[in-house]
Image (cartoon, rainbow, N blue to C red; front, side, top):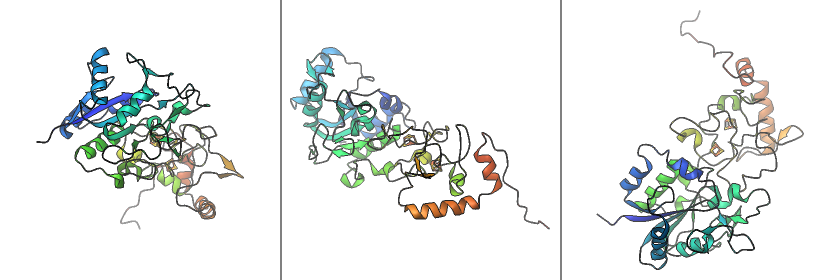
Length: 335
Ligand code: SF4
Ligand code: SF4
């Protein structure tokens, strides 16, 4: 059997939510998954026992090339402020900014993995004028660059793998790590924003339980309504790259099934859409953001046709918080 792969997990400018989410991995759980994939967790700030000097020894040994680093995961954005010193986030006990550790350790890693939209693109930490000058590992918002630079390649000649999401679905992480461990993950498995295509080749709209309402543009008008949330409630599931409605969270949920609009948390810049997250921006009554692949004129024409054909059942149910009109029953032997 080949040697296990060494994984180091660091956290910087974020809320820790991607780790919280990762702990919800089921069948198998996260530690079981790493074990099955042949991944040895060198250290994780929330899951490991080592502390203080023990940790700095591990980091120094990796930086010196004494411990092989197969996978470096960073959760949370890189904090570059103030004035590109990184001093807003010092790595405790080392007297050095986390930013420098991330650079140094990335140079030793076979694969560098950004876990979550903060680590990938800057995310929530970069919102609101970005006082900490937060950025992603290889992106600053939509722009390539970030901490490591647009041309960064890891030791196996791979760019940073961006498991974007706020937070990431646990299985987006465990699947990607398992693919890497199997030697089954290459650049061809990533989309143009560096996201694993295993989940990013889907749209959140796929499998949404509100799709029948969408077809007839039977729209929710207030929170708790059952209708499609695209027209009024800010849902961008038709543009958001993720499989949240087919893979589901905690075995059964998604933002939309919980009654919340999809805010496209896997995309760079999602944190500042320029409008209220739960309101659809419109010009002359027409939503500004339209479904992926759909020319505007077609959408407008199709939407008005489908609105004209909306069945009474969907019209009523769309603005109710429970099913008011059940689908009619068709009997085979109707006279
Ligand atoms: S637009 Fe949003 S609420 Fe409407 S069907 Fe698509 S994903 Fe569901
Ligand atoms: S439904 Fe949208 S906002 Fe919610 S987790 Fe998925 S991609 Fe993110």
